[in-house]
Image (cartoon, one colour):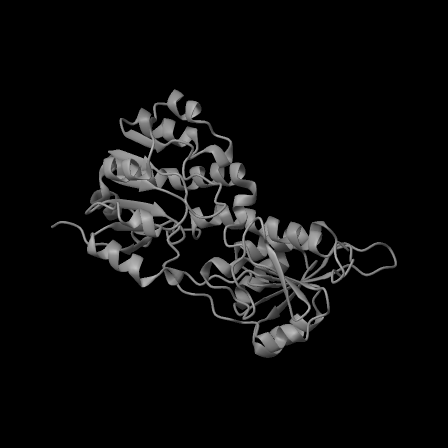
Length: 351
């Protein structure tokens, strides 16, 4: 199969869908890989490294799309890329269709594109490709919060996340007990913070209490408990994810107004719309803004901060599925893997 890897066009997106090791595996299986020149630069993978494992370097996004049967990319298809889509072309990417424009969705359906969302693929343990990015995002969320609590400007609280003997640590309130929430809790505990996790699923909360030997507090999430947690928090980490759907606003603007001056919101759910009413997407170069005296950090592609690690993680998780489709053909691969089938956002294949 002919496989294309375009250079990501989203602002400050430094990740690449497949590291050289992934391309090597595809080429060894007899497939042809077209890589747009510079696609790996943000992750410090050179064109020469890709050439050494058999990739063919091309010099425009149009050439990648027109020469490839399967496209592997990180972000959702852009307005420019959608014009190059071919009928029945296979797209692997983080689709996040809940926040994609109707224009792009209509174009993909009109061209009968077979779209497989990394964030939707399942296995017996969960969402394997998304899991790899969520592990990174959970760590980065705490890292960002720790930095933003420091006295770097007039509004910052000047609080050490872990405190010291005789001085209380920061209170970190995490909304969601999934992978992001679990890893964020682990990172915050490791730094000595006081951690409270809210989730509506009591089974998830039991799992966390057992995992962390009651080092954290768990609370069933509802409007009353969320409002109390928000008011108490030095840091709120929004880690809510509803598969294939826009994230609901669990924290209202009125709740945000009750927060301490200089407290921090890290909305990791922003790539699906955000779980906090006052959140809006920011960027790696300008990640924060202040609203109601609260510092907001809402970077949709937060894992691009560590693009090389993220690209390796994405390759490890996504390559088996891309290889399966390339080796067997899309119909056979889907028939043999229900979890891969669940990754399909929409499809119109030839009969």
